[in-house]
Length: 346
Ligand code: SF4
Image 1: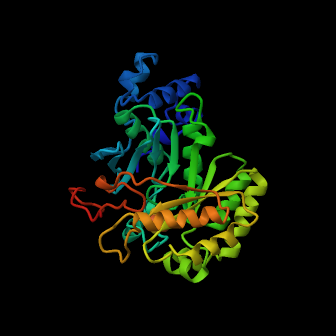
Image 2: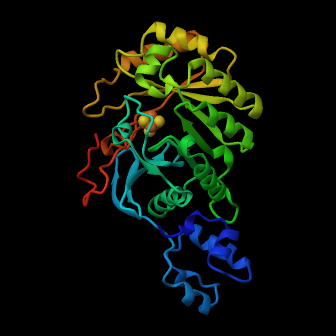
Image 3: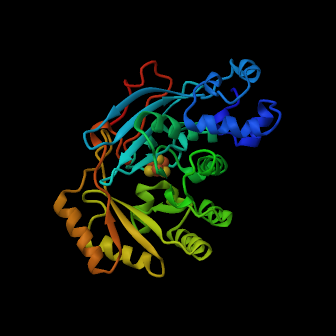
């Protein structure tokens, strides 16, 4: 596959494109992040350079489908250079703040039984450039984006190096300049990755998908729990906390009749002891062919009240993007299809 320019730092661009003097790499980096789609737009680059580069592609991927929901959520399907497809989502909050929800892999190997992406299996890891391009496509279509969450397709800590590089690029002051604190990595609980992330010293936020604080139930819902016990998970979170002094988010996908009872809340109370966390309740979003049901509003309110009574800090994620199947756990697209709209999405 061709080298992906959007996945390069300024010095790498200068080397890749044999640019001298090297500040030309910085100029090209700035243009890419201003949204240039061709070298001919880069007016501060001498004409002979632009001419010599005119056959090079700036972006390696293209948007093949987009859909918007009445609540402001938008989803784009992106075709990669090997004809794989991925999806990315734009979330808009009540203050009009825009967040890009990015995919780190095409598909996912983690097999969470409540998640549509899991039904695709893992197609492949995405390169840093393919991750950065999701941001660039969303920003080009919907305007300035201030926050990033790695909560799209895939397990970001299973593609650690490329995710980290994409963060370095998106944080670069000559480009998007997204603050580390405005970037959240969401993991299914890969303990070695959580430790590795803590050791980088990069102050991004961490969210861990817990789903249940009861080992057998968690294992049933998240096969990753077979390799990573709740005890190991808690130790890795404590390590992250000790290294970063940060509060982390525990994501709790609430599934009707599965993990929504008082005893589930009490087990969660035990798990969060000694942890500086906030629990984010995410009501499960319906996905065809998966054997679960969404919790009703009364169940959600009662579960949240129980957590509050147990002095667990809690928030609820509002249901957004469902009409475009862009809500949490709903992302999936048939691969190598001439028409990705003909997909297996929920
Ligand atoms: S919930 Fe996340 S980690 Fe689990 S299968 Fe879905 S995308 Fe992968």
